[in-house]
Length: 277
Image (tube, rainbow, N blue to C red; front, side, top):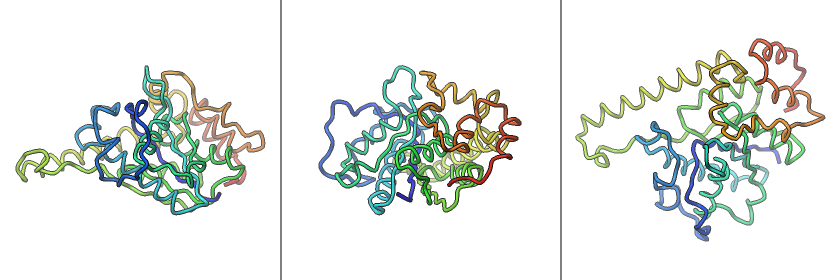
């Protein structure tokens, strides 16, 4: 129980309830459950490059890592972010894995669901907390599977704030559809593809990395905090009561930082002793 594999979620899959799991393991690019856009609750920006296909690839990669390492534990992380739905992002990803034949007798007990996280920082923080809650220890190595454009955010911001060592990031997608798939000439495709990835990097910087560089924890009163509240229609919060560890004051401190202003949280952070992980 030394390796944490983190699979952050980006949407909710809604087509699992009436379908039984597959006994045959599908391949990442093989058509099947998860390949239909209409089976996902997608934001407008998630359509153009078929983000849902990247979600499926992320799921497959996370399970590949889990199956390759019997000491690993997989945390699928994503809360109840969609109003009117009674399924969390993480549980819906688990259903995709089930439908694609990825859950086996050998790995089923090494999969944990974090159903509280509302952003990427909470994905990582709560994955550590859940690993600790389930195993009684902290991970020595962390592997994260997600979009390539979020690599900087996870490695250079979240992981460094949490002072994690031995962190790997596996960046997959998004993959822009080909000119043939879009039925457009190559020169038009070049323009559309470049504009898409330029916009993607601009949005990642403006709405994520710039904000996390100013406020590491998404503290109360910040744009990041407001965004988290908007992604929490059930008002479940960070899950402090669920994750609280009586004997781990540093973890408990992190679980409370978002209820402080950033200057208050930063001052408390600077006074923390050696991290237990």
